[in-house]
Amino acid sequence: MSSEYTILRVRVTAKDADTLRALLRDSRPDVGGQIRQNEDGSFTFDAYVSPEQGEALTREGVSAEVIEDATATGRARQAEVGEGDRFAPEDAVPQGLALKVQGS
Amino acid sequence: MPYLNITEVESGVTSLAAAFPATDLIELPEPTFEGRTCHALRIGTHRLEPKPAVVLIGGAHAREWGSCEILVNLAADLLHAHAGGTGLAYGGTSFTSAQVRAIMEKLDVVVFPLVNPDGRHYSQTVDPMWRRNRNPAQSGGNPAAVGVDLNRNYDHLFDYRTAFHPSAPVQVSDNPANPDQVYQGPEPFSEPEPRNVRWLLDHFVRTRWFVDVHSYTQKMLYVWGDDHNQSVDPAKNFRNPLFDGKRGLKDGLLYAEFIEKGDADDSAVLAERFCEALKGVRGKKYSPEPGFDLYPTCGTSDDYTYARHIVSGQEEEKILAFTVEWGMDFHPPWAEMEKIVLDVDAGLVQFCLTALA
Image 1 (cartoon, rainbow over the protein chains, first blue to last red):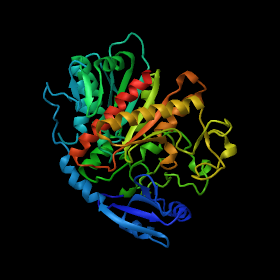
Image 2: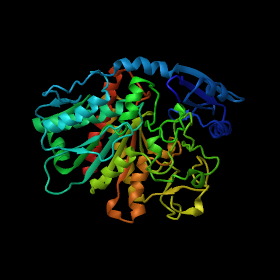
Image 3: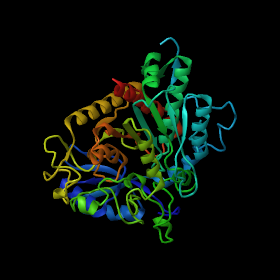
Image 4: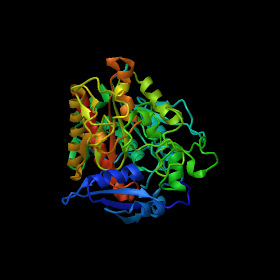
C-alpha cells in the first residue's frame, strides 16, 4: 500500500453463511470489526479495501456499500495531531483524564 | 489536547518518570528500523523485590492512534491520584484512594504505550491507514511491500499454512505486498518491536497479566485466537501436529484449542469486570469474549504471551493475556477519543483490581 493508495470503508452483506465463508476464503478482506448476523440470516461486516478490491467483493449474494473514504477521513484527522512537544517545558507532565477525587 | 505525536508519547513517559521518582523508566533494548528508541514505565511504589506485574502495551498497529493516549493517561491518573491521596472518577465509574493505593503498592504496572513509533509517525503524517512498521527489508523496493504486521510476528502458530485448515479465514499473509497489511514477516520475531515486547516480559519475571491495546470493535478479547476454546481434551493443542490443517474453522468440529478451565474462567472474569467498569463510565457496551470470536489469527501477542508457560513447561510463568479493541473507528475525532480514553482506562483500573483480588 503506497501513500497514494485510497482505502474505503465498505459495508459488506452476504446473504448466508455459505456465501460469507466463500467470500472470506476467496477475498480475505481487511475486516474492520465483527461480523454480525442479521435477522434475515444474512451477515454484515465492514471491510477496509481499495476501490478495486471493493468492486471485486460484489458478486451473487454479496452487496458492498461504500461508507466512507477512510483515507480521506484519516487525513482530515491528522490535523488533530499535536505539533511540537507539549511536555517539553520542565513542569509539563501528563495529568490523566480522570477526575482526581478528594476524600474518597 | 489533540492526539499525541510520537515525540509527545515519549516525552509524556519520560516526564512522568521525572516527576514521580518511584517509577522506573525502562529503555527497550532494540531501536526501530528508523532508529527510534522506545521506553516503558514501571509505576508503583518502591519495592525490595519484584511484585506481580501487569504489562500493558499499545501502539503496535500504527493507525490505531488512541491506544497510546489510553496508556499514557492511565499511568498519569494512577501516579497523580496516588501522590495526592485521591480516588479516580471516570464518568460514572469511580475508584477510591484505597483502591488506587492497593494497585500502586501491590502491583508493578508496566506501561509500554508506543511499540511502533515508526509506523505511528507515518500514519500521522503521511498515510493515515498505515498499520505495519516501516521495515523495508522484504519489500524488494516496492513501497506497497514495506513493513510487517507486528501483531502477526510473534512466535505462535507462525507456520499458518501448516497449522490451519485451508478454508480457515485466518487473518495473516506471507506476502509482503498483501494489501490488507497482515504480512507476518519472514520469521517469528523478525522485527525489533515484538522483540522489545518479549524482552519486557522476560525482564519482569513476575508478569502475570498482559493487555495489548488495539482498535476496534468494542471488545475485551482473551485467548485463544486460533480456534474455539475447550477444556476437555488436552491433546488438542497448538503444539500437536496431529491437528495440523484442522484449526481455524468457525463452525468446524475438527478442532478446538485446549485451555485449562481455571485459566478460561479467570480470563473470562477479568474481561467481564473490565467491561462492567467501562460500561459504568457512560454506558458503552464492550463484549468479553475469546479472540477467535472476532476472526482466526496467529502470531499475535496475546496467544504468544499465554502460550509461553506451556512452551517452557514452567507453570509459575503463566501470564493471562488479553487484547482490548477500543471504539468503532481507527481515527475518531479527538473529542470522542477523550471519552474512549476514560472508558478504557476505567476498565483497566478495574482489571488491575480484579487481578489483585
